[in-house]
Image 1 (cartoon, rainbow, N blue to C red):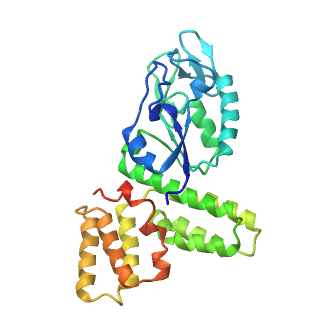
Image 2: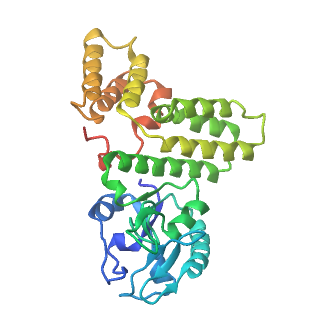
Image 3: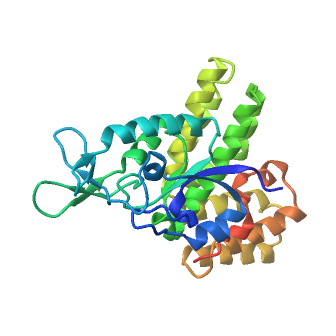
Length: 316
């Protein structure tokens, strides 16, 4: 069964005509592909805080403190109105237990990075962040958040979706009021996933789990959650994947014959060279693990981090 994964999203990306010009920015990948797996929670800060459509476009304007949200023709300053709206709306979203959020790029309300900030003179500088996006990131520091523009990058897309499903599993663990054994099992299942992102965080989290029973469980869970989600933000590389794949091969080296081992190594090296996608050696490894099951390895989320239908490991 597909889990109830709730994702906040800028309404225009779903096709709602809420933009300043009465248009939308419907994204087919979001609606047609991700929509099969996610439950959308649409939000349009500008509409929901009372602005109509069509409406005057807004921009971020440099001030002595932080950028202000300004309607440039009417000179209306909407900064405080947005701040009050964001506080109330984010509290409502907190009750929904979101597992991720997709923002509209370049928006003075929702842009996550490199939003144009206007000064008194000269060209605008791409140094800002939308005011609602800023409040969202501050309110939910562990939540996987991305812009739809950055999701066109296949590596960033995979990282975001992996973080969403990982965060879902983490919040499901917290929901059952976990005992130490539950945290240990969760960490064990994610060892190779963590190793594919960062050996440093893999080791830090291992040392933290070793403190189970020595420090209060709530403190342990809070620190683990912060480190776990931070680790998953670290960029995965081909080299890191190859290291993990050879680590997996190590569990099979005593049960595979020389021909099977040579075939597997050849595909690992082809992946290293960019000749085949990651799914090829992963599929072959899973094939051998079905015939030579190792329970600890079969439980690794690294082998099945998200639905295969997303085909995120099918690209060279």
